[in-house]
Length: 126
Image (cartoon, rainbow, N blue to C red; front, side):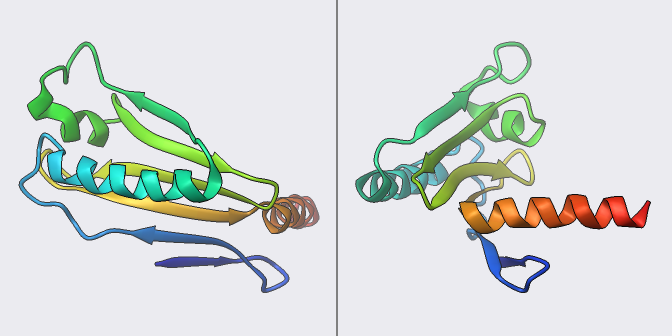
């Protein structure tokens, strides 16, 4: 779990990384867990915006699912949002046969404040 604190020491983002799903180049076990989490998030936050793309040139075989993710030619994530938070559930890969999911929660109001403070700090530093 990664916690992000803003300049005012307020927690604005929480990111959780799953265990590695090893020996799963097709992403079967990983997608199964992803789908279960997506179902829970949908029940709580409503339908998310799915962003699923499989490479159509290099990593076209089902056995290359994680390699496509690792090399940025494929992606598999869903964004959820309401008035207070934005959430992203995504699949990532560290190799052609090892994947994991990443779940990120962001407080919208605090995230906006962090971005404004960052711009101010950068301007002052220059």
